[in-house]
Image 1 (tube, one colour):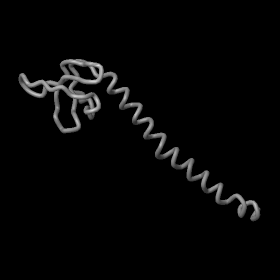
Image 2 (tube, one colour):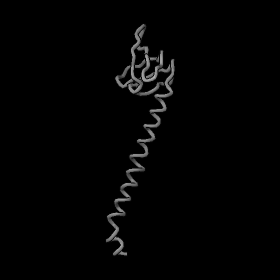
Image 3 (spheres, rainbow, N blue to C red):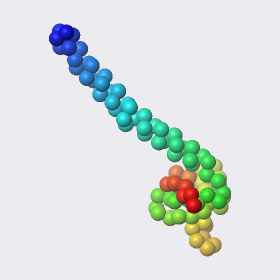
Length: 90
């Protein structure tokens, strides 16, 4: 048994480390990216959104890679979809 551990101990620890990183870092991040992409693809007119700059507004128009957001009375700004941090549910 000691010979086996001496020969393959380093490889076993390396494999354990790779599995740990996959399960606790890589996989959750991929899941989060998938959820974000789904959220951005499902943006629709009337959604209340928060952008990364802290502005809260309502989507008035959705284009392929951009949205038009009303942030005040008669104030509409174009914004790239990636600038949306989250959808706010009332």
